[in-house]
Image (cartoon, rainbow, N blue to C red):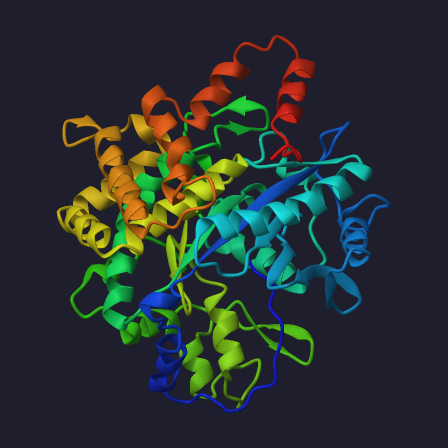
Length: 460
């Protein structure tokens, strides 16, 4: 949920055809394909293991102010410091105070990792000075919903009121989930369609590698990725697997039609968010918004609307792969490498396209429903899913080897896939490991210390 900043509009939009240019401008040449990473994590007070509020002495506002002293530029909503930026990197606050790092785009995963670690070497010491710890899991393992502080961002407060009308777990999604997301480029409308379909079909499979959300309120859940389950009970109109993407008529215009009929959360004018639900962007383009009668949207309004739609794969001027739980740092780099190996090598792209093409709509639906519960242990086509996962992983590995982007020690990007091979070799996900250890702890203090042991550290 990246922070939105208003820009000066140059023209008003009145025809759906005008929206196509936004996506057309996202096309990249083969030589300019890039990969980006978003990394969300929870912030806890180290002693109490309570989620950290915004405005206290050692809260998130104070943490962000410390960034200003080391060269970061602040992003404000009214007078509240709600984001930071530096050299193409963006740091923002999710509704419950989760920290979201958004990288700049990179030509390879080595450069992406280097940028991410520079950020970690800033944020982790600053957090430690305030006795805060940063934790990467797909779902908050400890906190009750009622105990989680809300961030002072107006859009979140409007979403908080709207979410319960549309799904039973929308507020949990906002405050108690965290993810890794990877952004990837497309070269043409056809290339976008192929990658969109592959991304949607594989999202339930790929998510099993990263499943880490097995705890809620200190209890073990019957899920591998409870976060994935939460997303399936948030808001059907703006989430999901988007079956229309697999239709022959899929393209920029078809995706625009989908977006036009999704209810607006709000519009942004003169520094204020104005509620607009249940009207749609199509209503806005006709000048029929009750909250802004006779007015028409700009491209800035379109970008804001796109940012409030959350399918498993999201199209902007690039494609976002949104299916992975947050977790250990090496898993974030593995996610970026996995998708780069599948998408940025022509032979791998063809191979994975054939695999996805062989999945029926019923199979895609089954995997999306089943994998949050059973993860890598899912039975698919009469055998363990891990055999299909291994095939996908090997295709990516070979693609990365053919990309042949190496560093001084001779390693190519396929080295980042090692954590995923280990998941398959051990037949054990992060959720398996967490639940196994959780069952051995006889006291609350031992459980607390285990959670503390999962924090991110500067030993990277």
